[in-house]
Image (cartoon, rainbow, N blue to C red; front, side, top):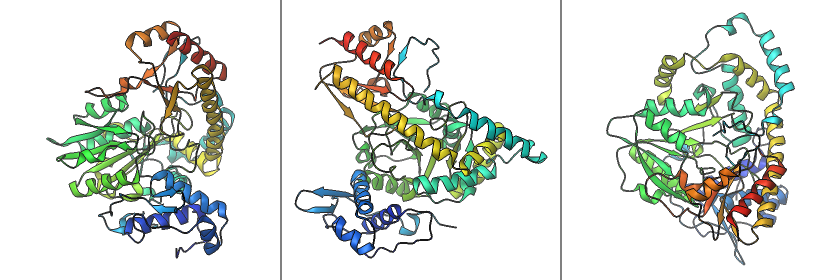
Length: 465
């Protein structure tokens, strides 16, 4: 494989090998159908453990780069088109929440973290220390782009957690990802140009985009994410909004074939892709899915948030901008709110630098995984052979397809009358209805075991046999 491994780097062996194999596939050195060495052979050639080789192959199979075929070993997937942008641009240079306070209601909404597990004592102690030790100048106006210490800390965090190498200058701090999306939509809104969004999609975020004057056109999403086959005849596009690592709400991963098609579309049409990476930290099978940003830094705008990692009360998010947009963004942010609240930025920077953020993510990942497992067990108990889970084991919700149930308005209201709130996928569709009448979104992150059990029991009682 001729893969060079560096010892003095922050990237893990797994990530280094993954990047090198991916590069060979994209450049065409490894072609569709070509067989790769066995994991045993690869581990021997590179002097690594077989588990590391297995982890690399499993990750690339999950993302669609490789296929495992019975009797044929591991091969490069078919249908991979060559990326049409220079390979030097592939890698970065090294230089909805419920407002109902009724505790009797069991709300299967998505996107709400387990707020009772927020590290209050550690956060309060650190916040106090940071505020006491800040120089006087830190209490004045700060850079519209954000506190430099936080931008540096996020850059280091992205490298460790997502393999994204970026200049902190290109990280802009926002008051949550919603503001980030609003600012970028305003920045990119152009007369007679449309914005392409996934369908189904988060209705609140579509309203954010539309509120800036953008004209929205939808593209269907399926079990491979945004259907990029429908992009070929589309022109006059300002940007494409997508959730490639965990499509919201369907939970699918954008396949590598479609990722390449999408970034090629952006390059050829001189438009941008907004990549909303809203919950990739909580993936329960394998490593986090690689970002679109890595494939085309000049045309992909990466948006992240700490609302689901820590708490929605901490209104901090960030966007990773192409160099070309930095000056215009800074001017717009300055005229919007001067800057995002700075003291919390300093505290979060310290929280990341001291390793407390990743410690908290690890704790929450185990908690959410247990909740997810419990929900699956209760569904199996109440609906044996009567359902299937769509999408991947990631994030704070799952999509459940029931074989013999259609979630009509009457059924949803009947459940609400019994204090159980569910969310049919059809409520997330724009325009023409697709075939999702048997599917509901079920959030599990914020619910206790007893509430999950009770909610699914009531669901079963209302649906009947």
